[in-house]
Length: 108
Length: 120
Image (tube, rainbow over all chains, first blue to last red; front, side, top):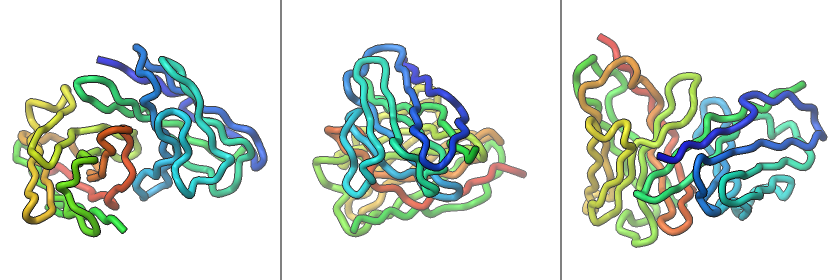
């Protein structure tokens, strides 16, 4: 089984900060990684798919990069609406889909 | 606009079977481009993929849940369903249904989620 490790689990930041969240896969998954934002009491919202493709309507301050086993989600200038929990999700053969453990972005 | 809506009991007794249905509107569940997925989230914890189904009935399950999970599809009703047998308190979670792009492997439309509590 392919495991995904997301870090950090919690991140404290201020409005305007550049924020980076990392996901590492135990084996190469090519570019099959997506990122989601979840706010309390709501379903997750797709931000990025296939590692670096911005979902329609998502602000351009969000970006994704990486391939193989290491991936990052970057928020270039953190906005008040961005305080939330972020999850990566990988796809691998079988097929199976697995989520990272989540990163909570808190106000510093 | 595609919409998904979960329905089913909010309380299930230990050792019994949890049953949920996801109704899809604004689009066809028989589209060749998508799988349909169940995901759950225990209170205060992260997301767990339960399984996915194609309109043809092909299913893919999380290996850790496979022995207790059954996902089925009813194309005539534009619905798909989840059954989890022999539930325990650890199955208490918000259960989400979602659409999964078959080629790009992301979940783009989600239901609002439904809390299922396992308790006697």
